Image 1 (cartoon, rainbow, N blue to C red):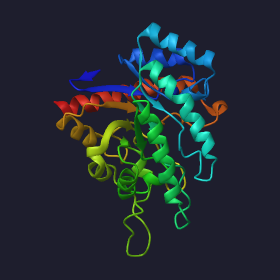
Image 2 (cartoon, helix red, strand yellow):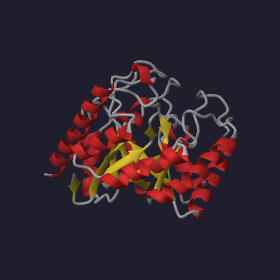
Image 3 (cartoon, rainbow, N blue to C red):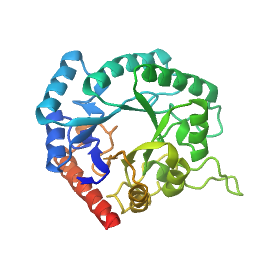
Image 4 (cartoon, one colour):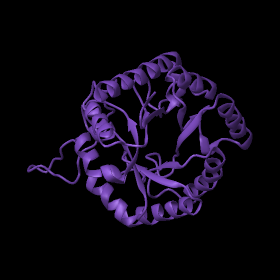
Length: 297
């Protein structure tokens, strides 16, 4: 689907671990892009060379493009105490694969959040991300930080500070991530923190956003628990309003679905009903298309 300037993509590893089925889901939706993350249980930058070349051939055969590399660089799975060599090795594997696939954007994060109130080691995060940015920039590639459960996701103020410390870095905005994170820049009078508001965060960061991920959910029952993920527009993540803003402002990037309604990316494979995942992925994509059509009418 294309609404003049918006093209749709998705983390199709939520439909199936198999690339052939990911492509099938993408084509069933009538889309041309996949946001590449997992293939057969491995991140795309962790595939063996033969596995990667097989993936390239399959993508070329079906004329499916990769919209972004959803890398694990600086992700919530790593703390700021993780060996930085692991990150550098991921970069070294990622760059040539992006170049071969002609993918302009790599998703990175700012390492897992330390418990609030503890030392966050900000300067080390900034130092690492400046190095990450420089290596990709030297290769002519765009680094975009996602507002997930990492330091840059603590609040929009944290994200803007990160951009000051890493000049030139862009943003990927995930509609659902603010809904399950407290706004650490705005304490209440009693010392507690309110939940972030997705539309407010989007507006604060808008000028730096080049790519959108769509999740929707309700607030977790308790901090640290998983939220209840919903179809787009049925949760608290302000998806219709954000889509309306994108249409109003002639947004030129890609909008990628990351449903989580049937499974969460980091769930154990043996706990997943993949047919349910495939079906819900298709349903999710069509649901988002309807929202965009309604907001565009």
